[in-house]
Each structure stands twice: as C-alpha cells, then as structure tokens.
Length: 63
Image (cartoon, rainbow, N blue to C red; front, side, top):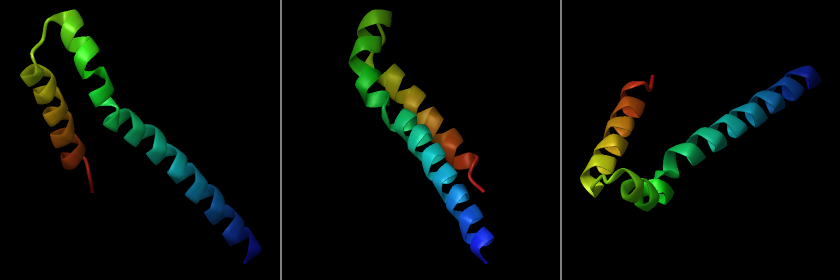
C-alpha cells in the first residue's frame, strides 16, 4: 500500500510539472504579441490567427 501511494505521488508531481510548463508556454503568447508584431511587421490578426490555430489543434488533440 505504501509503494502505491509513493508511486502515485511521483506521477502526480510529474503531471503537475508537465502541465505547468505546457500551459505556461501556451498562455504566455500574449507577452510576445507586441514585440513579435513590431519586429516582423505583422498585424494583430496574423498573431491572433496563429493563436487560434494553436488552440484548435490543442482541442483536437484532446482525448
């Protein structure tokens, strides 16, 4: 019984770490909107389309 709880704890910790890294990257796009748009000469619609496409792919990849 103790080994099951110990294994479950590591799985939970690993899952939390993966979610924190992936969601932090996913939700951090707003920070890069102004600098990337200015550097590449993109409008907000181009960057918004890229984020929308990423969100669509994220949704389709869910089980």
